[in-house]
Image 1 (tube, rainbow, N blue to C red):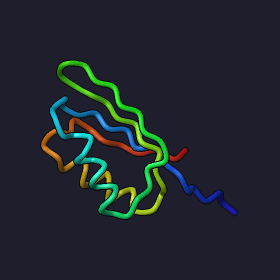
Image 2 (cartoon, rainbow, N blue to C red):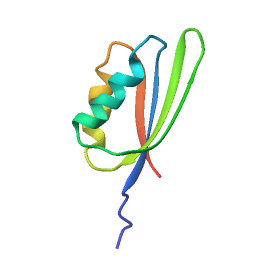
Image 3 (cartoon, rainbow, N blue to C red):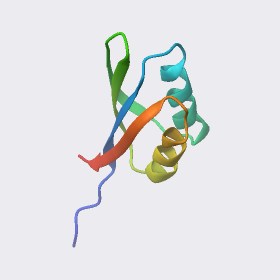
Image 4 (cartoon, rainbow, N blue to C red):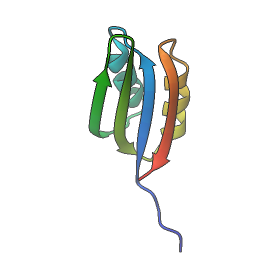
Length: 79
């Protein structure tokens, strides 16, 4: 049968303002998600965040992250 994807990557571009990482991590936590790895890079105006997370509720997480005023774009892809 088809392979079951258990881990995905969320890629987020956002305005570089204080508190963005905490907001995004809070969304994952609220959904009882598990962040397995995380990478953040910023310059003076924008940042990008890469998260390895469990597959469960990933679309809900992406929808909520996209709802943040600071978000430029968020997508997820299967690992």
